[in-house]
Amino acid sequence: SGMHMQVNGDDLMPGSSGGVGASQPSSSKLHSMRAYGNSKLAQIYHTRSLTRELMLEQNNKSSNSSSSGIVKVISICPTWVATHIAGSGMKNILDLFAFDAEDHGLTSILYAMFHPDAGGVKSTSTYNDVPLYNDFVTNSNFIDYLKRVPFTEQLLALDQPEGLRMGVSWVGVSLTLILQRFFGTVGFADPSIESFDVEKQDALYGWSKEAVKPF
Image (tube, rainbow, N blue to C red; front, top):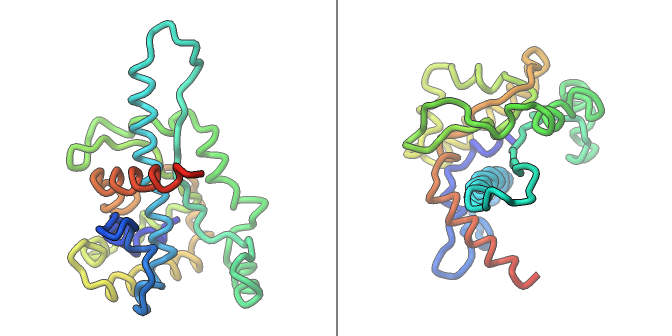
């Protein structure tokens, strides 16, 4: 989800208490408002760490391995889809503006599943020495256009106050709801700058693997 742009990943770092900040109780209104964005950035972090782990395993296999293919892990952003999980209060608005859950709302899922370039190297360039992959799919390219608006990227930068970043991101997702139908092109997109932070990706992924061990 594009809502991952609300947060910078700090809440997802394991702390001395053994948990991640996003899971800790807090009376802060901003803390609770960041919960959804944190869950979406966490998905991207897990996707990219798992991709590196799978690629390493594949590279370590012998040439006579019986494995017939490589597992690819992709994140998707369907933008606004009329699934009605938000309850009756949002139903009329979603029916008016959002993509149909049984029509265009499915395109990002199908694109990620069947496009031959999904999970492949995006280009020869890197971001902070991190390879770029086709691992984030959206069914509306409106967000890409929105990010080209002057100062948008700066307002979503790491050093901006939390409240300002939250406000800017909500303006963006609200505009997306209204205008996404005019930019209904499915394809690979670039998520937030923070999504490329390998240290944060691996820290959260390592914590998650330990957390699920008992199960």
